[in-house]
Length: 163
Image (cartoon, rainbow, N blue to C red; front, side):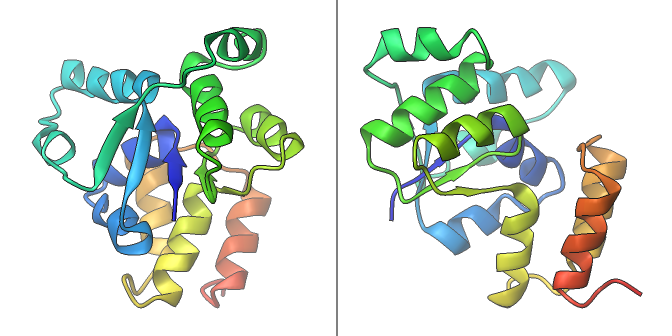
């Protein structure tokens, strides 16, 4: 399975000490070079990125179609643009992305998308975590992860954690 990830899912899971979920669910994850560079910026906030830098299941690749990346930069940031182009180039099975503009553009290209909330739902279904709510709350409180109240409630209802 070929899985490409944008920055926010990797960063969010790393910051709540659940990066391992990506490996357990997908085995291997490819980060576009621009995404990797964005993740490296966490160092300036005092994060030790050893877990990411030494993970043998994370691969860093660059998209080769630089002009297509450039065209997407009119609407998206560099990480999102390169993630979409790389997903197309590698015929990815899945693109992990949360930003709505990027998701919409990827879906127009026929790319299958999952977001961080979807990863948590799958992780619970696979028995890797016991509570989606606990981790979503940590993402919202500790990482300033942005999610609408409607999506939050929908996800928790989907996994039976909404009172």
